[in-house]
Amino acid sequence: KQEVTQIPAALSVPEGENLVLNCSFTDSAIYNLQWFRQDPGKGLTSLLLIQSSQREQTSGRLNASLDKSSGRSTLYIAASQPGDSATYLCAVSWGGAQKLVFGQGTRLTINP
Amino acid sequence: GAVVSQHPSRVICKSGTSVKIECRSLDFQATTMFWYRQFPKQSLMLMATSNEGSKATYEQGVEKDKFLINHASLTLSTLTVTSAHPEDSSFYICSATRLAGSLYEQYFGPGTRLTVT
Image (cartoon, rainbow over all chains, first blue to last red; front, side, top):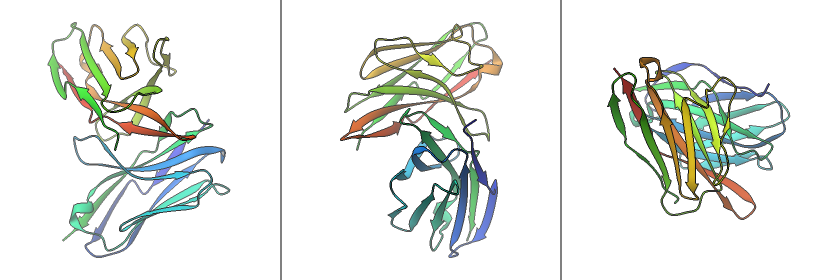
């Protein structure tokens, strides 16, 4: 069964720290992997999309890496800010089927 | 960028009634649309895959007679929750995929909060 797991479920850090969120997935034959942000009661905001042929993507203070052989992806957030507080979701698409399987999310709190 | 809208954003209905939720791709034709639901403090669970002009493909455990999906055009898919019950209260999110070159890109709607009283 194709599954996505995120650890930790919740994370609280002081403002300014660099942090890493983890995502693991079964079955390395992925099509792509995406990281999303979700604020309470809101929809999803796409942060980064990594195709299966890529190893990382960067956008501003965010960097996502992909290691298919180990079934892992990390989202690195540099110089965290209180506005980064949200739930971060990792989602994987397999075999070009387009449908996404989501992890449980990591609820991130950045303390001023 | 591509925009996907959902209507309504919030709906409250009485138990036993039916509710229709619309998902539209505003500036592109979607090859496929997906419907997800999200319970409080939980992740998104795929309900069904919808292709224009054909029957939706439902995930295991999702009742197709309860969650009716119609995909009438390349820019519109609707989800109808029939005979709604309080346990159907949830956040419903749709997404639409666009083929960009040889790669698929998926865009999400803002979600619809359904409360069944």
